[in-house]
Amino acid sequence: MDINSSVLFNSTTTTTVSYDATTEKACELMDMKCFMILTNGQSIAIAALCLTVGPFTVLANILVLYIVFFTPQLRCRPSYLFITSLAFADLCASINFVYSFVSFHVFRQRDEDYVFLFKLGGVIASFSASVGSLLLTAIDRYICIHKPSEYRTILTRRKAVTCLLFTWSVAVFIAFLPLMGWNCIKSKDHCCELFPLVDKSYLACWIILITFLLVFIIYAYIHILWKAHAHSVYMEKQKEGRKGQVKIGHRRMDIKLAKTLGLILVILIVCWSPVLTLMIYDLFAKVDKDTKKVFAFFCMLCWLNSTVNPVIYALRSRDMRNVLLSILPRYKRQLPSLEGSTESDGHFKNNNTITTISSSAGQCNVVNSENCL
Image 1 (spheres, rainbow, N blue to C red):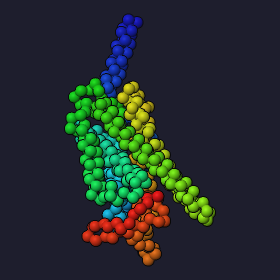
Image 2 (image 1 turned 120 degrees about the vertical axis):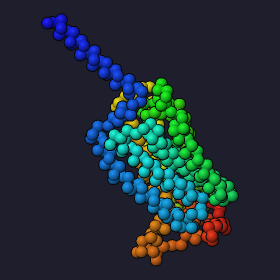
Image 3 (image 1 turned 90 degrees about the vertical axis):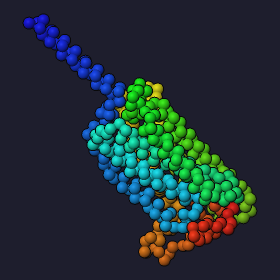
């Protein structure tokens, strides 16, 4: 009797070990179920956040697109073309990310391998285009600060459109490389543990690309801040003998620019560094279940970046706010004309800068443009 009980116990133990080993092996083979790691409470929190923030993100970016598209004075400026690209990328990122993220983690929908890679490609393309548009915006402001007298020659509307087409082409091509074969559907040995079916070598290349773009953006804005500060100090020294109000004006401009660029840099670092850090960790170490949960919530930060972008880059613009107020009947009569506006997408210019833009059949003629500070 004792012998039979011992055999039965050993048999049950062996069966349990075998089942656990099979489950672990299935996770190693990139079974979709192994990535659906959120609890019911966490899934509800994700769904609530998507339902509250998602509509705001979509409406904010649509508003930016509407303002630029139906305002010829803005549509003809390269700066606002980049803002339009950023808004469209963030709009696509919000829709693709929320739909894919909620269906996977909340409703636990398991798609076919190539359907999943197609959805993932849409998310990657949107976020890559968003970061690329941020880079173009940073370069635009960098040129405007670094070479203000040559800005209109260096960055024409045609060059801006060419840069946008190149950026979107590269973003879409890179995003759909896993769908075109650079995946680990057949070879399971090199799959990353944060994304199903994604090859580690592809993840490493994408990390390098996004990191390079973000570093370049940060460098450009730090250089802009330094250049603006140096210009402000120089102007104060040149006008020492004049009224103190001039000094205060330049100090206020310097402080305003520092706050804006500081906010941009903080948001970029906060939104992207946690995700990229865990992706790099995935390349060199084994990822456990808790780390996957943390990564799922960190991905929400990248999406929140698409939420704040229209506020930081577009709606803070005085020209765009004026156009927005013109939509409201109460403020329509009080709207100042955009003709002769000295503002171009947040470029901080002095009072001596005069830019006259005339719109005729979609053509933009700049009469005079000197400084961008």
